[in-house]
Image 1: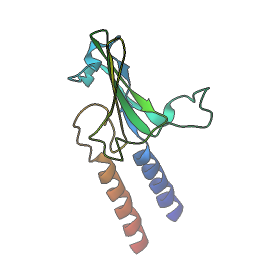
Image 2 (image 1 turned 90 degrees about the horizontal axis):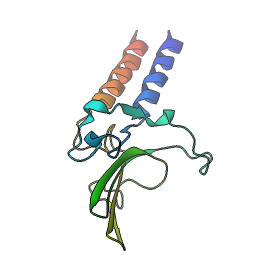
Image 3 (image 1 turned 135 degrees about the vertical axis):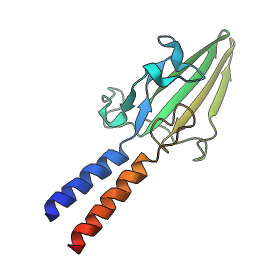
Amino acid sequence: MQTTVVLFLVCVVAQCLALKCWVCRSDSDPKCADPFDNSTVPITDCKQEADLAHLPGVRPTMCRKIRQKVHGQWRYFRSCAYLGVPGIQGDERFCLMRTGTYNIFMEYCTCNSKDGCNSGPIVSPLKWTALTIASLTVWFSHRL
């Protein structure tokens, strides 16, 4: 019985800690642009993303949204992020902005606070609910 409970708890915690991000490009799916419409975009489990040849051993730990303006045209990219830190100085409300020559602007946002954080405001209490249920299951199993 205890082995089953521990295995259940490990599975729930592992699933809760896996970050899911939106993965799309506005040049191939216009709904990827802002305002974001995820009706045609499946959410991706970042732990299932392939390893990158140029970053051996590095796994994605965040979500990313890139908004760039090149020669007057806006493009949006949403994906799992392999490098960087969430937000600016840990505050996900702020994004890194860069401008360049030839009318180029780029906004780079990273986050890891909740699944789908690279879209817009999404409330996701599912992780905390699952962890609470798992904790209560372990607690009750020890009382029996």
